[in-house]
Amino acid sequence: MEKLLHIIAGCAQQDRHSQKMLYDQYYGLCLKIAFRYVNTYEQATEVTHDAFLKMFRNFSRFEVRDKEKVEMLLIGWIRRVVINAAIDYMRREMNNTHSYPIPEHVWEHKDDGQSSDNSVLYKELIALVKDLPPAYRMVFNLHVIEGYSHPEIAKMLGITTGTSKSNLSKARVHLQKALTAENSEKILCQI
Picture 1 (cartoon, rainbow, N blue to C red):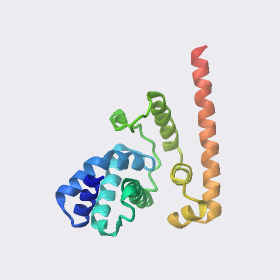
Picture 2: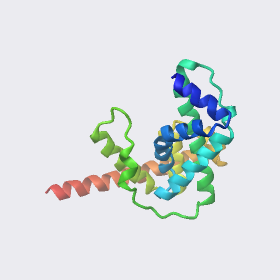
Picture 3: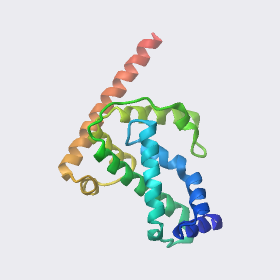
Picture 4: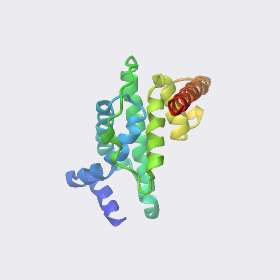
């Protein structure tokens, strides 16, 4: 914990060594968050790098209010910055609706204690979410995965609360159809 507090203090003072340590420690997490919003590995790295630049420019805004919960607070702040960077990127790139496969090396940064079955399920879910139209994918990620309310999503994306709810409903329908089709294919392959 003391090491993390030292890194945070260094980042607030624009210390390059501290910034590199933070980058190395949280790059994988940021990349995974970005991947839920964009189509390609290259786009995810671009969003991740944009997020780190924003973090480093604005690190003085991050306050350590409770030293016992410093890592949890930092991860929450980082997650928010990456999500905002992804939203900004998606606004710029909304016309690109192609879906691309996710390279296997992205999944190398596993969370501690994550079983291989959960890892496979996570990969499959993210692959299905990435096939959603961008507006549906954005709302699905923000509401279901990140836990934002519909009014918060509406404010973040500049849409109405009703549009947020509608997009979530349509995303769920798409995912249910995709899961049903995928399960049907698995059953047919076993016969």
